[in-house]
Each structure stands twice: as structure tokens, then as C-alpha cells.
Length: 105
Image 1: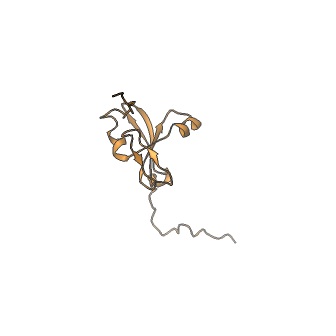
Image 2 (image 1 turned 45 degrees about the horizontal axis):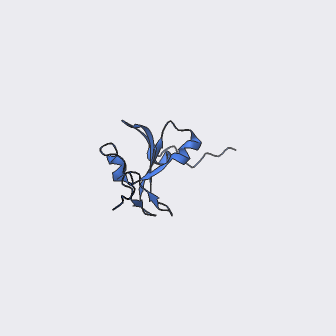
Image 3 (image 1 turned 135 degrees about the vertical axis):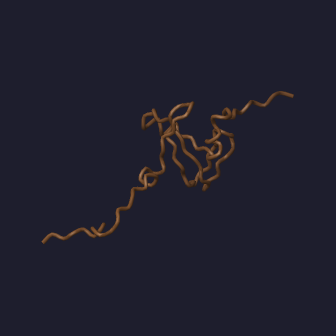
């Protein structure tokens, strides 16, 4: 005799899908500088340099990882950049920070 699944009993309510959880927190954002895949991360074991402010994103700090949406999978891994969330949000209002070589005195 076949048994019924107990994973979702027929009498219980339907639970809506949590899209944020199902996609791993990834979203696609369309901006003036192109289309980007953006993922919120909790932080890892490494430090990263934020391209927006040229400061360190310390290990264990929640931040944003972004890469171009039109990149191939292999390219996307190499082109991922780790941003402070505030720097990512402000990237269209200010240009990227560039390190300038030390000038002679």
C-alpha cells in the first residue's frame, strides 16, 4: 500500500517561496553603468579591497559582491568585486578611487 508524504500535509497552508533565499541572495540590477549580478554576503575569512573607496573590507564583515551580468561563468568568477554596501550604492554618484603615485618632493 502506498504511503502519503508527510512533507506538506493536505490540511496545512501553502508557504510562499522565499525568492531571496532560493536565489542565494543574488539579484540583477540594471544601472547606468550596465547590468550587474549583486549578491549580499555575510563575510568570509579573507580581507578584500573595495573598489569604491580603496579601503579594506575586513574579514567577517557583511558586504556586496558584484559582477557584470553579461560575463561568462568563468569570467564572472575572475571579475567579481567585493564592495562595502554603502560604496556599491554610491558608485553612480562618485567615480572609482584611483591610487595616485607618490609625487617627488
